[in-house]
Image (cartoon, rainbow, N blue to C red; front, top):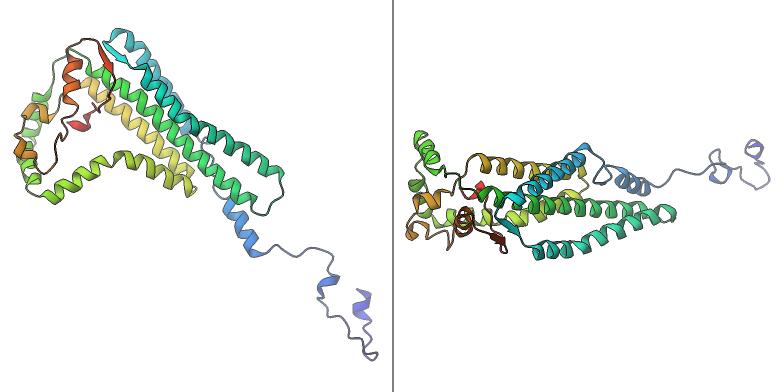
Length: 291
């Protein structure tokens, strides 16, 4: 700094300006781009499992498993072991990928690399997506078995009471279906929306996970499991075959909805209610979604 004060103005050597960079004894701040990268990688790390909702979902899965295991010996339902094995084999690559991503994140912490925070965050988001898919799959399998156990009962169906409730509310199911059937475009989009359930269960978790919204992803997964449990409880309390079995509408009333609209489950439903040994080989939805 003394040289800054003694600049020799007459010797041809120009004095160094007061803020000459080679005289500053400390590093300049990082570039804005680097700071933005670090902020992006550090905000809302997409780790799935840090909230209480994961503990809630785990407890819910354990409760479903306990109920199914206690109920199964007293039921005529027989789950096909090969289906369970095939499901486990199909999910094995996801489990392996989750482990590989975890190992990659661990290695990135030890490796000096400019974009390691970004890569670590992407890996975390992929792990969150895999965890969500695992929970959704486990909920689906456990609750599917519960619906079959709940359907295999000799309790009388309550469709007549449900139809009477509709009439009290002024709702005419036949007239409503006839109205929808008279508008093929509406019927088509309603059927498409209904059949998109599986696609929604793939796309929505992917959007939430890959955009780093792990809290919303946990909420979505927990609500999926809770909604399924509530549906099973209603099935147990109010056994019903559904409106298609109760009203038996003429085929022309459903011409705009395509063949087998909401009736594919009826054959298995009536077989289960005969209380004969039933092997689950080709699962069909038996929940109140068909009522």
